[in-house]
Image (tube, rainbow, N blue to C red; front, side, top):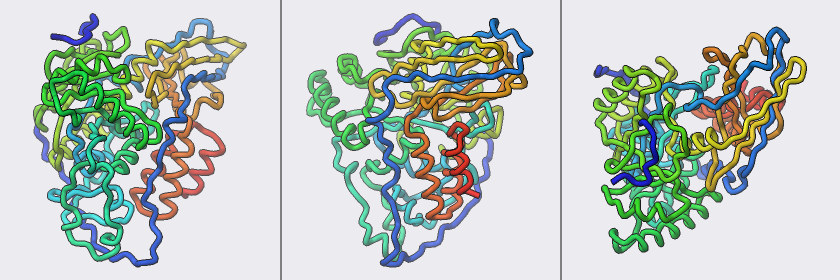
Length: 472
């Protein structure tokens, strides 16, 4: 049975080399001050309705009355949509999946958390991929891969902590044994890098009772809101093929998009002409070779016929880190740069903005004044879209400005369009400033890369230039 199905039409095995890099164990002085709290983005204060204004000044060589504006099916005008969802609130979602994408050490036998990173302490068997993983925004700026992790709000391990006193002594690898799962501080850090969250199984005593599951959705949501500065959860990854969770989700309005292996629909982004709310999208549990075959097969199809590839995983290890490296090197920023890998909730939001945003333009002499009204749904946190201006090219643009609602912006040509990437997250500058400060305190190479990454997301402004100056 398909749940709320609406009408829509729908290897090469590479030996990827990784460089081994040992991280020496060090002793931390008793009086050493280290901040390990991380940046807690104030999601509860995010904009709820956005009216963005962008003024494009041209050289006057083109008749501007003929230009057309559109939000394309895929952000950054990419040609394939790829999702990865990691089930069971696994610690490897942080220390392998997130770590591989963001240039952190990988261990073949041990596990670590955010505090280990901030103390600079890692297992003795670590290796590095040697780069961060992602695509670009079509304008030369890195966009690291995003994925979805399920969380277990009712489980005690999420509120557990690491003994600071043990970290202040010489460490052996016993410090890096596997814990029960992700901790909230790990989740908070992952959210800053674009990772999404999803419900999975909960602590109901009756896995076949819709009312009981509904009750635990609400209990879990309250814990999430309290733990993540007002951020709620709107995604479900069906647990163990249990359709009772899907039935309960259809009665729980905050859940707006779902994924499962059976009773689903295939997502064909270029043919989707409606919102994704209530959809149960397909995913498959591929191995690290099978997912490459699936992606290659989609790229063999015409653009408008391509389906999204959605991979489900439980544990990830170095094999999956290398698989994501292959994705980066083949279809990401170091390859064809043709893939978009958002979290499931980020795509849900983008599709909502594409369907419901109001775009108007006013022509004044040689200027195009664009007004973009972006409505925000419940628990929406990624007000960011790509806007194509057909009939205009970068060489014809001599000036570009925006109002305060726009905090991030990049642009370039795309085929017969002038492409604008617009980000309206309210606290984008504050987040970038935090990571610049973190680098200035640590002077580590990975913190420097992160600081540049977050600053690059900002639109041009004196504030951005001041942050860049601190990184020189």
